[in-house]
Length: 115
Length: 113
Image (cartoon, rainbow over all chains, first blue to last red; front, side, top):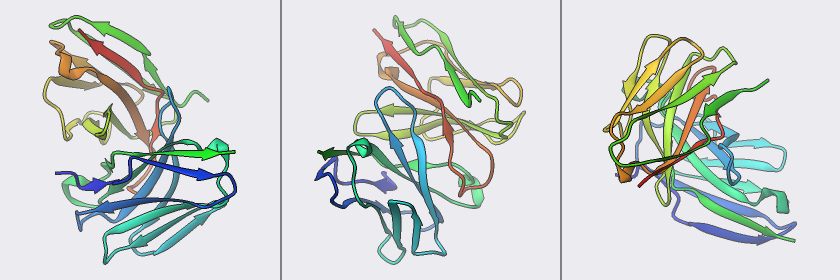
């Protein structure tokens, strides 16, 4: 049972435009959500996170939006740059219980930004 | 500052062989994790260690064992490798609570033939 889903395997955008990556989750116990970026032959690197008590978090060109009622989050990259081309993973974590601290990842979305 | 170091980077095993994947972090992090990445599956948690001296199973622990040797080191052992264990393995560590991101190593690409 995939608790975190990224339904778009790939996304292609033009340089300078907005990239929107989507993620859905099913476990209502999740209360932290994170985005990671991964280049080939490297480990994932942490991009941005959001707590369930917020609906938006910004860091430079990256903004994450959380819609708890829909169990949906999205990552917006504005403006997109060719160096943003990578695989993006959505991840979720629960603050308590047996799931404490463990991240559950989505399948990933390959973002390609064309010059 | 090296972060999380994994060795080896590549390995080819024959079915039934054993090996240990090594992981060390120099950031004084308490929690350490082993994930595997497979196409279309994302990253799946194999085992984790919330603190020195403790280990727990993750989502896909079968066929693996782990050792938290000390605060810095967390190793993953395949006792009898199977083709289904062909994957890219990532070790990660984390400094704080659930909202903090992991720091990942660069991965070990393992092929079992």
